[in-house]
Image 1 (spheres, rainbow, N blue to C red):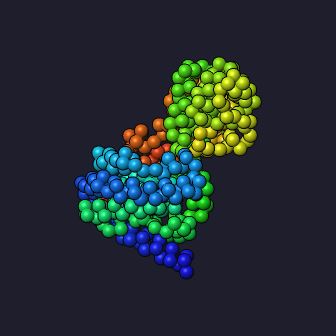
Image 2: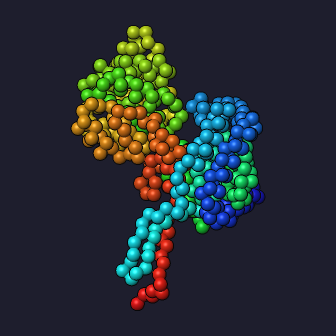
Length: 430
């Protein structure tokens, strides 16, 4: 009986979104932008209500023993609600992704062909403990003319419910169709499974969360999936690197925020500079409370730091450490024999997300950028920049590690398709 109720809830919300999508896709840019501004204003007006709902989620998460990195992703305060509102306003300034003429030509028979961008229709987003995704996803979908069905994680249930209710009511009051922002209240995992079966009602499914969630959606969904990937990201310090710059980049990539997918999880260092670079780099990481999972060379250096009185948490790395997205104050450290060794390690263990080289040798940089298989590759910069806002896209819907349809941070344009529009004067085909 419970599953029947969940199925009925999911189907009702998805069908309402399908109905809304037909009207929403015809709304003008001005109409959609006015709705986004109304949604931003509503978030600000209901900040106290949203933060109070988040307090409920935070209290429950702490009681359940949730680790600090996930609590940071879950937490909302006045400043983070303001950031959500500002992100919606930033979308207003972006060009209209709809109606763009991507191709225009005359065919052999005199017919005029245009290829034009159009909405996807109904976008379902399944995500975990980040309630800000509720606002980002709703805003991006609406700007691109799509209705959305949101299925947040149980940990953020109260926060997501409050945010989605505020956004939907504001959008409808601004002239958008009822049901354009749907939110599934059920916290049962069966709700996600039901959503994944709605091929023909839901046009695309986007999972945002851990490896288990993403894998489950990719393997089980009947709805086409845009795969947002986990972030086992690397910073590689080449023997030609300016060492002070390299330390700064490593610290930012690892320590800026631990619970984000663009955080560095493995530090690779050329062996020939290990004795010059690692003592300072490992000491700085340890000072920030980062635990070190070290190969043999790095372990010996960490051991000497500890013997000198430094407070260093370290152990021997094993195979699993090279594969792990920690999302926590932990990092794997490995010494390599040069750029090709670093590239081979990254292409074997990385998740095709974001990878960085720190070097002054231009040949090494070009080889790394060309041969590393990832959505974003950096030379002399932190992986923390892999973000839709940082790339000038506004709020992102996710970071894709697949190669079809969307790759890297994706937002408005990735939530459109296209159709061919042809005009003739009575042509018929022989």
